Image 1 (cartoon, one colour):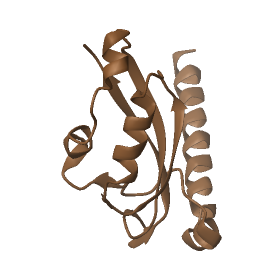
Image 2 (image 1 turned 180 degrees about the vertical axis):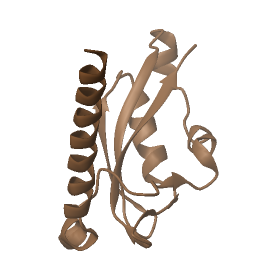
Image 3 (image 1 turned 45 degrees about the vertical axis):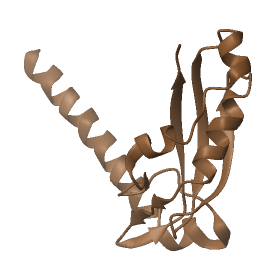
Amino acid sequence: MKRIRSLTIILILLLFSSNLSHATDNFSYNKSNEGGKYLAFAEQMPSPIGGLKAIYNKIKYPEIAQQAHVQGKVYVLAFVNKNGNVDDVKVIKGIGAGCDEQVVNAVRSSKFSPGIMKGKPVNVKMAIQFQFKM
């Protein structure tokens, strides 16, 4: 019984891992990155030059948000092109009171190291979270 259970687990893991490797083989750089499309994953994801701290330094806690005691996390989707420039920023989940706009402007004006796939720079979309806390 114990041996059957072990064999079953191994078989499931093998099937799962073979499906994953097959999926990444079909996820080719050329097909995924033509026409300005953005990958959701790259072997090396983009990272802000100077780290997230450099982006946080550009963000000012809006006065209206402070007066209203608005706190929380702002989640954005940054579209980083293969040159490391941010083409677009979309708020996934915001907290309002000017905080969302501060994050969008800070991310949009930041420079990133580009994402890398198969040794080549690629367009990547990535989610980033920022915390506003009093």
